[in-house]
Structures are given as structure tokens and as C-alpha cells.
Length: 218
Image (cartoon, rainbow, N blue to C red; front, side, top):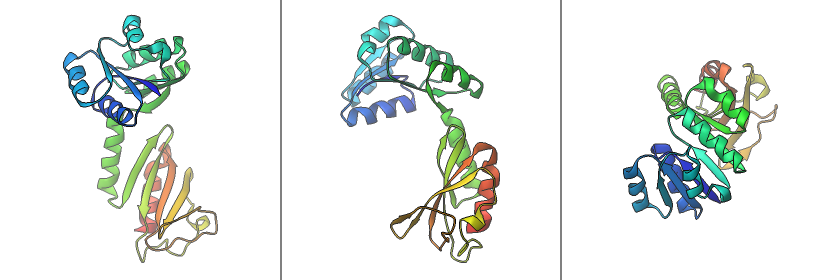
């Protein structure tokens, strides 16, 4: 894969490093020359100091042969413009961080796959851990979140079925890990102590879902 990463903040740097270490051709674009020099010393990739909304910079980065462009800056306008230009060069995959929720529709209209503000994801994870220490936020995706919880011995939900513990709207059991085995949580499956349950919940039901799981399985 030929990947262009826009922005060398924490996320962009980590992404570029992971892609490079996995054998992909990576080009990073950042306005900060020191950041570019620093990552060049760490990874086998190309770094360009410049503005990713400048066609000349994108062409120097090889936009005409890129398979994907990922915009990771804290500036939604820059991210959107870089993706829009990449689309005009027929880059197949466009991905971007969206820092302000109200801008999400603009990115979707351009055909960009979006990830919400990473600071908010971290904040939500910390909140969940603080309020429910046994519940872990695995991922925050568009429209919802994926949580993981371990069933405590003696918990109210032990020996109850999936069907009996599905009282919260917009919450779905995805998987149960039990003794190294993966179980698909159909309606008649019962929960056992030490089961590790993976749950998806829509954002609007997130608080109720976490409280419900905590009451059942802790």
C-alpha cells in the first residue's frame, strides 16, 4: 500500500510508524520541518515539510499513485481540503479525524471515512473506567461504542440467558469468551462466571448500557 499521512502529531506519527514497520510505502506531510526530520531518523519513509492543501506538495508526495490518504491534524478545514484534493486525484481510500462533530457531514459528503475527535474518545474511556472500573471501552465508532466486561462470580446475571438480560434498547451482545473459546451470544446462551462479554451500544444508550451491565455482572 502507498499511504500518505497528513499531520505528524501523536496519531499521525504512530500511524506512519506502524504502516512503515509493516512494509508499506509511507509519505508524511507536515508543516513542521523538525517533526519531519525527527520521523525520518526513526522510520524508513518519505517526509515532506509543507502544506497538504497545496497541489504541488501533494504531487511531490506521489498523490497520483497513492492508495490511501489519512488526515490526522487538529484542523478540520485542512483535513477536509486535503481529502477533497486527494479525491480529485482518484485516491481510493480517504480517512480523516474529525475534531468537531458538526463538521462530520461535510466529510461524509466528500466520501471520507471519519474518526471522531481522539481526545473525546480518551475522555470517554477515562469516564467509563472511573465510574465502572470493571468495564472497558474497547472502541468508539461512528454511532456507538464497543465495551468489554468480565462476569463476576455471584453476579446477578450468572446463569441468566442473553434473552433475559437484553432489557436495554440499542444494546447488543457481540461475543462471549469463555475459557479460550469464542461463543456467539444467541438468545438461549447463559452467562457464566469469568465470561468476558463484548457489547455494542449506540451512543445515546451508552450510559444506560454501562450501568445495566455493571448491575448484572459485577
